Image (cartoon, rainbow, N blue to C red; front, side, top):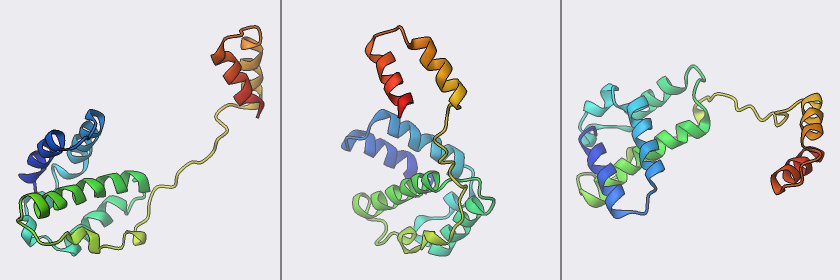
Length: 145
């Protein structure tokens, strides 16, 4: 898997419309979550769903990973598998797709939209009340809702 990762990333860059920022995100995810894990030293043909189940459990057991971050990492792994299947023809199926990821626990997402207190909103509105550019008007409109 480690050998296919850089090959896959180069292939993605050269053959798809992937943005540079996405390539950088893939590299960052790989370096943070996969690069030093023992699973990448196992030949892809020998990897089973349980190997990824154990990996995913290690990542999620302490609830430090959000569902979105987890899905981004899993998408990276799926991409490598799809490359191994369709482009390299070294595998016939993606074992990661056999895993029900609803069983894992994730870091709760803070959906608190109150970024500014009422007092902070009023201070901002007072500060920009005499400014009539489009940004100040947009801020005023946003804070009034």
